[in-house]
Image (cartoon, helix red, strand yellow):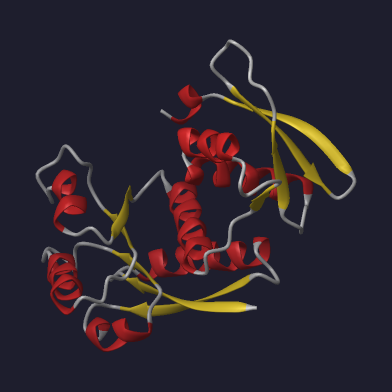
Length: 212
């Protein structure tokens, strides 16, 4: 089983406990495939822990100080390139931190999630980065050399398709990879696949509009 370390950098103990519960939930979902080990930091010792980290969940503020920016600069300047989720206060429209430009300045920042009502989104993003970290896709293509099938996946966005397939696997308690077969799509613009798992075959219809 693959193991990886997730560093949570936050000065709020209740947030640390909450994300610890998220990690425990994700480990249950991915049992046998991935184990995420949470590593906690309160900003003072964060630089000593970065070398052994696969994913960083970063609060931008230590009290009223923008300590998160110092950490992002350090990761950028040292070339550590740690996939990072910013989980912090405020909104993208407030004058706390210019969130809209952070992903451009720091390409390793994969997602910005605002504290409060987006806990489920944070859990989803942690899980997505964990799967990416070990290059583990929840599906296989029936024919890897099928150019049309590869184009269909690409047109929808591979990450989008992975999210849908992972959701199907969790809902139906499927442990094996789902196999995707190409089918002829109709005139609605949606892409139609046949998905096969265990001894079942089903039709999966996905629209590009669903992901925008």
